[in-house]
Length: 257
Figure 1 (cartoon, rainbow, N blue to C red):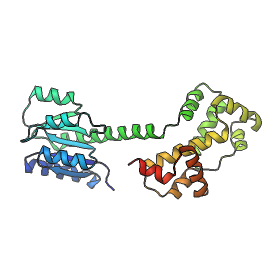
Figure 2: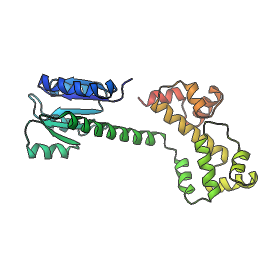
Figure 3: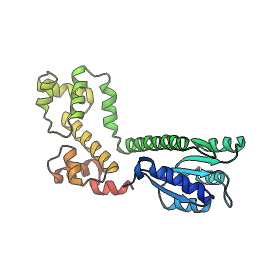
Figure 4: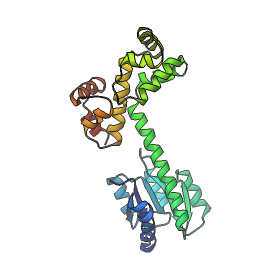
């Protein structure tokens, strides 16, 4: 499986193939690098498949790079864009930056300059993806719990940290209470008071949140997702997931694509 999809758009065959070779050799083909000879072809590719990074000439026949940016500006998930030009035109550069372009490269482009900008673009894409995952898996009750945790007594903060680190393991109230040096009954009452969730409710929600992260970001089987989240049986995991999310883990995964 490829990392990111990078689309190079340039009407000069030698330029686009040269850039493709440089990026292909970088990190030994980790990313999928595709090319388009003009803006119309580029838009067709972007419409059909997900493009993470778009590297294109600003001046092309039929449709210019700026026109492509204009078309894409209202898209929900536009690629991270880098533009190239053989001309140091301030007006073009200014307009491109106005469309959210991260860099404006002047031809001829050095290998180092190209790869530095591509690395920056990959970093931006990864940051966006992390934000998307967080937004998709957010659990309001857990957010409230984390907010309260900042002001909670130290034993509760330590307990939550312990739970999060050991979410894959079996977790019992008496063991966590012992870890934070509190009587189990008192710990149970204090936890509910400070977190607004019972000990078991917190663990279930935290495990399901972790499951959603794995379902979105990996292709591992549902049985492995269950195991990674501390469930010994897949059947029980699916039952709890459906109770909280209203759908099965498999359906949830499909809905994200």
